[in-house]
Length: 396
Image (tube, rainbow, N blue to C red):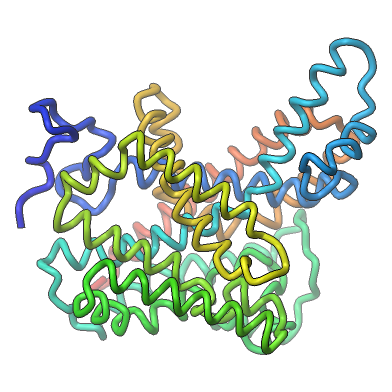
């Protein structure tokens, strides 16, 4: 395989921007880390706003804008200017949960890209599972202990038998008791475990079918699964959100396709991903996703469209912010340690959101941003420390 560093970003001889390369031939790209950083901070804001904005219309749309203005109660010329700005800010924060799809896509991307950089050969799956579980579980266990001992946090559930089940990795069964237990964000951990179980099978399918047929398979499997869950079986919404991996396979599979393409055709893939045409496509896909979040058959396609469109948008934003001193590097660092931020942030940002309810939205936004950055920094330090300790263990 040719080295990605040899490829240019355009068809000219101009070298690729540093933010679009994997430094030193590693599996890390600044635009991937930056997009993940934006997504995790957006999710953290969303969780904080869940606790803060209980009295605001949800979601804020053209139809609910009047109710928001009534809540905002603008007075004077300045108030009438600031109120629409606040509505836009609140509406953006309310859609922070969309960032989950970006993480699903990049999860499939990272696993597949690392294997295809090794010529696409199957690894020893026993060793592969061991490395992945060693990566996932230690800080997950630590997050449980933090929740157990912390005196200041948002704690929606009591500590009971479910704590042990969750500690062991069960976030799925029984679904009503476990999926959102204690730290609701941890539902994503259960989905990751399911996807890791089926990943060897998916990897073989990708090799056999090729990118296009494999992506079509994932889209069809996901769409049928979602329709069966909500229209035929009328099952609980948790199965749609991620208790059944098939309902989110589209997003993960799209990431696998991107990982294979970038490993095998780096220059062409980067050119297409960061073109203006692809950005327009990403905006169209994301807009379509927002229009399909409704209780009919279109909901079969909402999360897949969201992940593909939003990933394109955030990747291009991350590539551009990487040129801004400090900002790009900070977002990339948040992306590198997004797993720790994800596991640790929710009980504390929601507690902060509750405490900030008496403040107007503008002041809330500033204070919440500062609190989220502090919590993110602490989580990053914790994950870095845990990773260092794990790396010193034999055969890790």
